[in-house]
Image 1 (tube, helix red, strand yellow):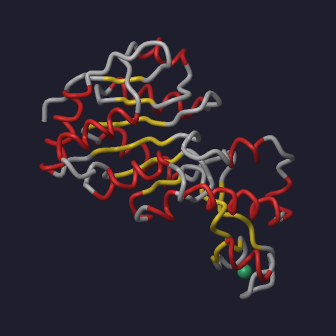
Image 2 (tube, protein in one colour):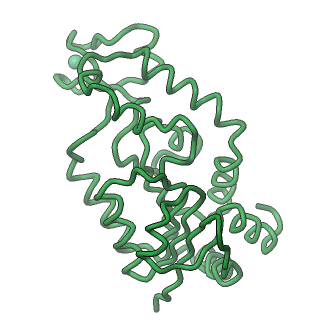
Length: 246
Ligand SMILES: [Zn+2]
């Protein structure tokens, strides 16, 4: 299919949305079942798990400080039901406007509300724990109740996250999704983007996909990518007006 270069970026100062054409394109892609990829940043929920844990001494991963992870997990769970962004995203997913999501935070929240096979958690998720000796896996709820000792071999369970080096499998999956998507929507970015994330977004923009960046988008990105602007809410409302029930 011929790819069209349309990009949308939100900023608080100017809103020049070409929402109608984006919505038309989304509707078309959805009916053809083409690939609509979302890159969801750390601004989706307020806990910003990765940012808050990055500031800590990294020994917390090995020491299995479950109380820290549990408090982030519980805070995120409490927020989900009230979070309008999450609700909008969930509804767009249910109506076929989301083929795959690349998620840039580690709270595990998206794979709890959307089919986990749809979500690529770039840095893993604090909701899953794994034994590095025997590979046994369990959930944060189990660890919160029973503790960090592996039931199979007695070694220490650790959160299934990758702070510094991403597994090759994940990198391959991400590159495949970005380079084969028919449309890429980038939302909820925060200003602590890593080099890897910046390059990923630049790649998506270079490949002439649609890029939508939500509130709190770093301003310099708008300048680098030279995109017009719009907000996530506007997009969701426009889709809703077009098909009536999102
Ligand atoms: Zn084990």
